[in-house]
Length: 387
Ligand code: GDP
Ligand code: MN
Image 1 (cartoon, rainbow, N blue to C red):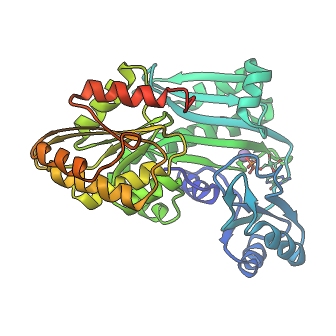
Image 2 (tube, rainbow, N blue to C red; image 1 turned 180 degrees about the horizontal axis):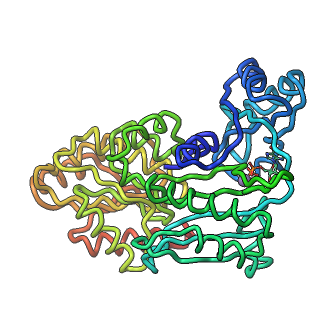
């Protein structure tokens, strides 16, 4: 789960990382009240989960209440790269001497944590990686050993961070690592990490992504789910209580049971296709759940075929079939369904589909999983799709 900047900064603060005093506002009046509290000058910052807010006009300096009014008025409701600004974060403005970059992530292949540090912050790190890759220091950290202040300082020296900032940067790196590990983050990034003219080092931005698998030990994360931003497909799936994960291939997948859904992804890959999603409708799925699943998949623009792979146990073939007929009646599907229906009441299910008289351009039935996968991939990769 990705956090907004203001949530990330509040999270940072719990681990001792210095951030500017500020507050969150949903209206212009609230923004002025927060600015009065934070002390002028302030920065008014659009809270959207996308980079480059500054360039898009979503970050403005304000010297007094009138300027806060103007800027908050402009920024609230603004659209930044398809994200609507619902809130602004208002914080006391900092004087900046230099801007650095620091982040921790998990390097799965190396089975270690990865620190990335650069004296060139404030711009997108991908840009630095492209133009001047040597300007980014990468340091692997064995999770058992952790990160000492001495090692963090060495990384800062390697990154050519000036002497005056070394102690401050090293201290924040250790704190940020604590946030990353104890706070169960997938990503903890500060860009820019600033050096003030007074010599203090300070987090001016926060990008935090939490590891959902650790939610069980963080009851406080519940608060974040209220503001969580889901894409249209995920929002719909959550609303309908479906186990759905969006991917970026072109074969939509519906299966009953997590194991079968994963095997379906594998077999689609094996025959040269790529899955648009993972969707498990679970055991005992009703016609309604099936119809909802089709609706969710239909919201995915990349989908060129929909592979429905059902091996009925407690899930019954005739319920699945009814759901498909209902789904087809409810929404105009963007892609044909390829179905493999086996197990409990599969025969009845096939009869229902036959009786409904659905044309072959909309639904194709195949007797085995492999044949169905081949057909779904053939359609998805076919000339009419071009995916
Ligand atoms: P992003 O571009 O969306 O990542 O937003 P950031 O929070 O990183 O801010 C972008 C830029 O705005 C920073 O790199 C700074 O140059 C500038 N900025 C943000 N906050 C302040 C501040 O308190 N004082 C000053 N002088 N500039 C700021
Ligand atoms: Mn930033």
